[in-house]
Image (cartoon, rainbow, N blue to C red; front, side, top):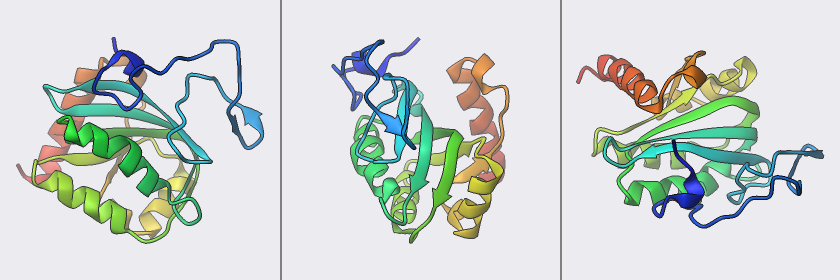
Length: 176
């Protein structure tokens, strides 16, 4: 349905992948070569879907989200989401079920992202974050800027249905 390397608006447009050469590692374990490196040493991603008419993107994350040492949120913002935002994406769904650890720092990049999207009635939703990572995310009070949700069946749903379901929940939360 979507491949980011074929999408001219994607930060990964034109990228080529090897199915046989594993070069990227996470905790000294090789990961599948189709996970995209975006500037973080410990976090990888894959843009699963982007719809520029409905203005949403679904991005899956893998690894350790480390804002304390690596400032992963800044790297994610500058190298991925800011580019997508300039192309019209205002709703970001981050699948975080494979975020093994989360280490927070200050909230300035989250706050900036929230304010940027707020003007366009946009939002950031993080799906299925593991309990320990979720605990650390909440403890850092980052839920003011990004909503944590659970949607176990997301893999079996079409991307538009995932977006519509989350949009309805967000509208209820925000009373739109």
